[in-house]
Length: 192
Image 1 (spheres, rainbow, N blue to C red):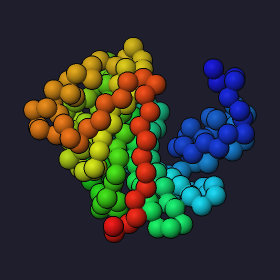
Image 2 (image 1 turned 90 degrees about the vertical axis):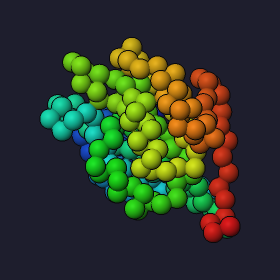
Image 3 (image 1 turned 45 degrees about the vertical axis):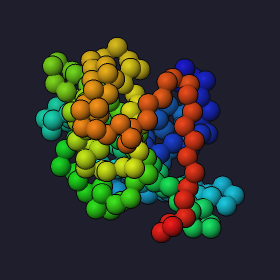
């Protein structure tokens, strides 16, 4: 699959992944450290991509695994409309995530990577409990769980998260998508 990818496609990623991708011939790779941003514009709209904190597993385990990052995508229109989308990446909940709502208090949508992946019995991606905690921390207007059944290593089915959402009474804060289903969002005027 990688061989079919256009080597000129812009990619924003961690510094370690950027080095690997450049070695594989990708020409437009931009490494981002936590809180670094890059802005891309097309027509009257731009998107600012900011690297968010991310960590695979507990501290000692995360040092052995590839580095990860979350992303904040801020869609900005010239007329003042904007939309903030947080993409968790394959992180666990840890103390650095608490800085996100301090910097970005109004998140419209969170895409949370779930699935409860375990390596040698150690949790390395969010499970239902961690997903709920991420929602409490980030406090998005809407959450869509993603990346919970893409690989055999995922140990926790989506139903665990769904049960936790119902128990918390948060059904109106979550939208579930089937593979191939589209979710459409529209930026709103800030302060409106």
